Length: 242
Image (cartoon, rainbow, N blue to C red; front, side, top):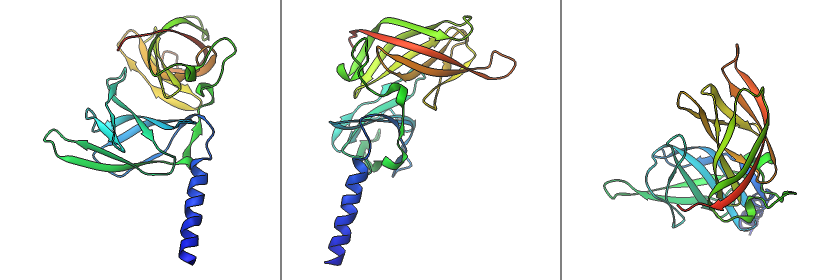
């Protein structure tokens, strides 16, 4: 009887931890039970419908993953890395991930999103905006940019927004700086590294739609590396065909 009570208490505590996070966008800590796959840039989108995890593969990648039986094909970001959007039943509960290698051999591992390590991304949290709907009002997909503006900096560098990707009620914008010297863009304390083509720098950064998102971009063009603050405003347009 005592063991049953202890087990029940443990389940209740786990359930409480899984429900501790309010709806929103979070930087997350994850535990992966396999060396074949490594992930970084974990972002958890918590909503009434559940939890969606967005990750970038550092090892492995290219294969379709199955999260508790749900097929999750990879997408390629601006840096050429494989990214995955994985459904998660609840925080602190293991998700079974299965995949097949090139020889058809089956593999599997577990993945856990820890509620204790969630760090709110306040500037990009899905929330109603005064001048238009937020990302939570749009379906998943890629959208053109109807309007984009920014303020901050010295005026020497121009920022453009190529497109917007909405997934699980959160928006990610592809930002292009007209300088090859930008190394990362920081949003809510999280650094997002970019890619330079020798003429410009490209980043994928979570943003609020129809509302202000404040970021800090680090440039090496000055005598010393320096972070410059920018305020961005992204207005989505029509959904683009895949």
